[in-house]
Length: 176
Image 1 (cartoon, rainbow, N blue to C red):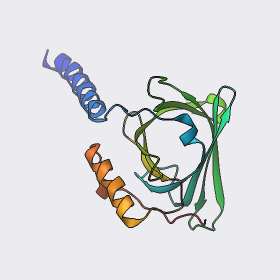
Image 2: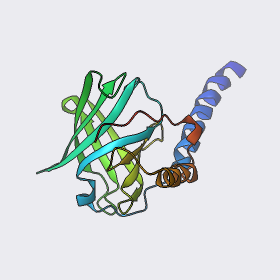
Image 3: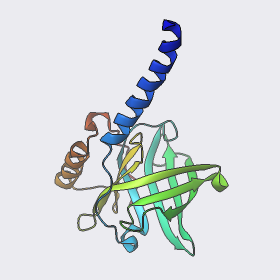
């Protein structure tokens, strides 16, 4: 009898843990002007992830298309002038009320993930982008680097959003 209760209890505990982790990620509340998303964004910081292991000088180029956006993410393996790695995606606005949630698909739609803009400071040229579950996070800038005070402010915002900034990686920047 006890054995029959352990498996459902363990499954419930996993579900509750996943739900509480999800609840900790704040919903985007700022309205994003979509024209401010266009162009090149430079990666300033990120939570570690397998896909970008060893990536330096990361960029993300956003261009408007008829049905959303074309996004080309790139980095150089090992060094800012190392071999280029590139991922192409299509993005669509998933929440027209805020324009802060995007559904991105990679590899012709084989992989799909929702990304949220959790903070956007167009006057300072940065944004914080995360997956809906908070597993991945990026600090992006419209210039290859951010001034130290602005970067500190952005990292403080990451902390306010509930992320641990000590886990952030700061890859070497792209050249101009």
